[in-house]
Image 1 (cartoon, one colour):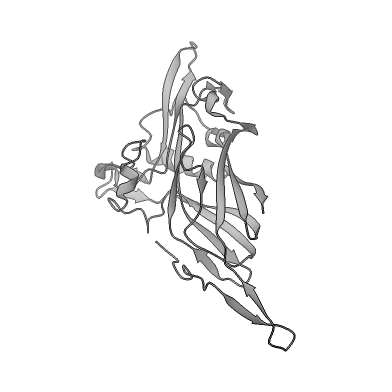
Image 2: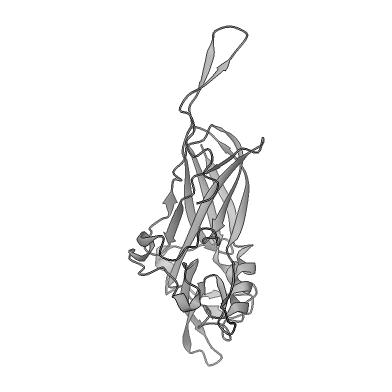
Length: 255
């Protein structure tokens, strides 16, 4: 993936001190990430799936049965512009409680960094058939059919909503690279996005919480009109990408 520069940091850096032979040893460290999920600040626990009802900004009542999403390229940028990026990825399955903790395959010197990540794969990394492990998870195939442009899903968010007769209707809020099947050749648009978490101080044993506010995916959203067949809907994919810009926040950072 991109920005692999500085993937391997020297294990020991020696710094001269006080004009004598004394040295300080700086040991690079790993940083752990923890993914949590909430609805406008109320934590979403495993017991809430399929049972707890939430009301979105359009006053539609809905439940959640699945939250599965891909993040990639967690990046640490130092004040001097040095970039550390392991170039790996993580598939989070909230209900099955897999991928909730993730340690990027890179070690960095302790210090203050701006931390960011990509939701999904950007076009440079969204290569059809390149990640066989993503098609071998309990979630099932994560790839996107070639008629829709290939590559991989960004997210599968599913559940049910109540229509105007209080009947439950299933929804499949699936995000992928936007595609317009009416165009020849197929029109594709990268709808992944970078999430900037802000500054994090990295110490010897740092854990960073990344919070997903699921409510923001539906702010705004007309769920009765847009609850299915969203993968081939170019405009819907663009709108979901725009909603996603407000979904993630930096949570608790522990050392």
